Length: 102
Image 1 (cartoon, one colour):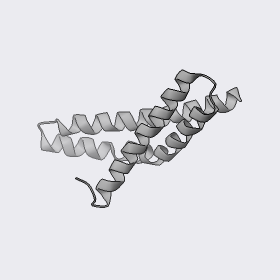
Image 2: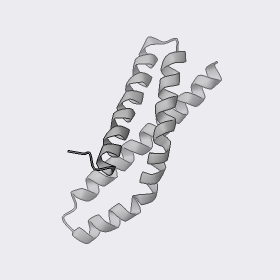
Image 3: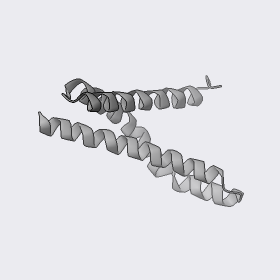
């Protein structure tokens, strides 16, 4: 069971890390005073953003499974919280993509 939890933990952290670094890159590109620099930075982030979007579901499922199978209370709370946080980010992105955003 420890091997399964290790694999779930690795998948969850890869998904969370890729999502956070992509969000940080987009935020940094938006702060650029140069319009061409922002455009180039956002184009360079296209592939990592696509990878992060594909890993979102894997990270959510891995976090939920890790929260259910872990014996340690702290790990349950952390994995469940990260899974729920990524779920909120996915729902926000989907709402914005389909025109139901704010």
